[in-house]
Image 1 (cartoon, protein in one colour):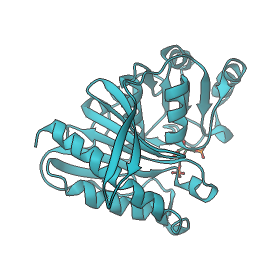
Image 2 (cartoon, rainbow, N blue to C red):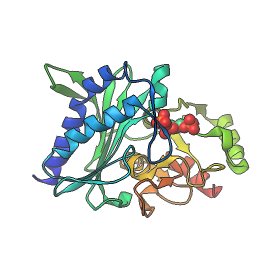
Image 3 (spheres, helix red, strand yellow):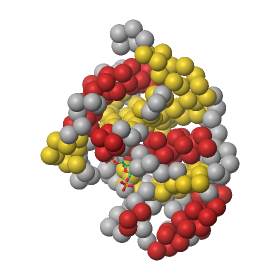
Image 4 (spheres, rainbow, N blue to C red):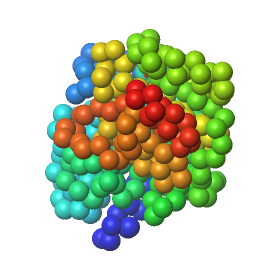
Length: 285
Ligand code: AFP
């Protein structure tokens, strides 16, 4: 299959999983007593969603590698594009019925590879509406997922060619351990912009995408490289932000320019209006 067709198939197959994932969360809100490769507690929903997506994605012709935030190693599954996924980002928000998401990066390269090798990226946001936001071919489009018959879903184009405009909101994670220089910057931003932070990367990023502003998770005490995994979270979200005409940064340069040597490598992460990202970089945080 042509790479474009593989990307189409990936978006459709992952979207088809939405009704199954949404209905399956209710009975999978307990922690399983194991940790993922990033030493984070795994919820039953994390394990289950990972297995569900892995089976769908590795069975697609034209997908050669599969990597997940929940698995230690890359799975080789044929020839073609490489897929890196955060199956259920924000799963700790499920017990409080907060927003959760699925993040997918599609790379034309052998994993681990840098964001420059991304050919497309998309996320699913499980909210009042379930939406799929896709960055490909230089454009970001948002679709609403509507369940149809059986496993079929319809994707309705809700927003075409989305661009991040304006500097309305800001939101930064990990506030319990920020370095002092970042605390000072956040105080400036809190005087100038509206705070939007909900503890869910996909939900918080999506607000920034539509409202205009900046979102991030900086390096902090004990986490010199921040919290987000570059392959599964940082690169795909940076690709979407930059495709939407905005900027991303690890505090120094575009997240997409960062060399990736390990599939679970972390990165400080900022994305949003270029002026706001530039102010963060100027503080060399
Ligand atoms: P979980 O997947 O463990 O819920 O973590 C979610 C997340 O990676 C991301 O979605 C949030 O932006 C971030 O963690 C919140 O981290 P803090 O709880 O440290 O603010």
